[in-house]
Length: 138
Image 1 (tube, rainbow, N blue to C red):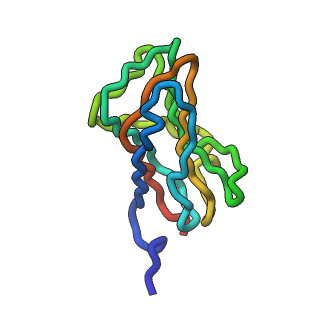
Image 2 (image 1 turned 180 degrees about the horizontal axis):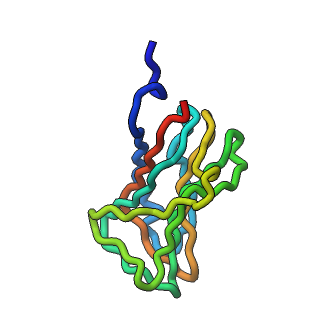
């Protein structure tokens, strides 16, 4: 019998950001998915529904975290801060920088993977989707 983790290639989770994140000052965290098998995250992308002009004084950071099996973990898988000169074009994917620590990209079956929005001052609105690509660790 063939299982999903036995299939070669990349798997993808696509999460629509809730309306609350489209409010500039809102800080929030939502569940993207529970790891279906032992895996390694290979890419994270933000697909904005509207243009976003980064401003350091009202910075917004979009991150993907691994909360572990019990939801208490704090491992940051990827993060991108929209500061001055870091912008996003509507409907054009924007890569979110992966952690440079290889172990941070790994998840075990059952780990809870979340999308986190944090802000500085009044923040900025986020609207669109986040795609998380991952491969099986066998």
